[in-house]
Length: 244
Image (cartoon, rainbow, N blue to C red; front, side, top):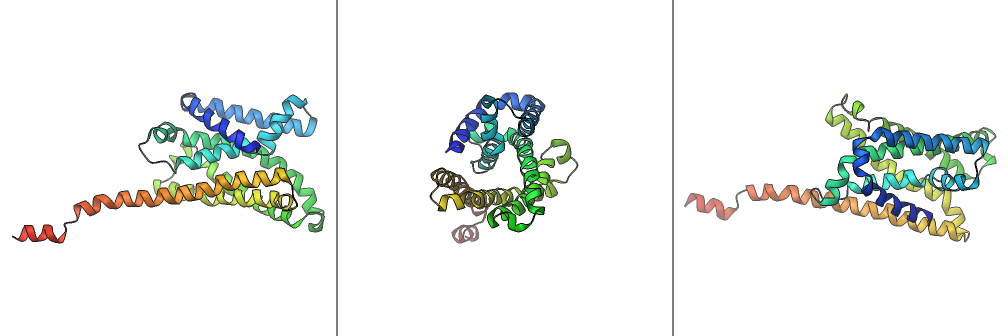
């Protein structure tokens, strides 16, 4: 249930901080890196509970980065020209880069913690954790590719067609994040863990809801594109009028 709260606050923050983010994105990138550094320091050397508690939820559980990615993905479900789309679309890349930096801190610590268990023998960890680790490696590769190509100076070096093809990797990335979460949460949820069950329910609503919204938006966009072509194509009665 924590994620539902984090997501709601993140959405509000994206609207409120849109102008500062567009004007000075580097300040937000630096803040994300600073949060990562503080988190890594806390993992190895400890921090006061008042500082560690929010870091645990936002970075270790990766909820802030995920909430930002959710906002980024749902922007693509909005109808072009609407007020919300017009307001958020110009900072979509910046939001994804902030999320990228935050998720790198999460992944670095988790991958480091997995390695001794993996090399200690596959039998030392459960099957779902091993599967989650392998999936995390795939997600890391996708994350690096998507994150690097989100920077404007990298985008300028690529052709528009190539950049769009690379950015389409965001769809499998987002879907695999959901699978990754299920691998980690379902065992506890199936054994009656209430917190895990609540988390699975919230994540399912978000990810499945996104899938339905994105497919719906694609169908509507295709329909809108087809309308002008229909209007320009003469009907049989128009042809008769022309002949007569």
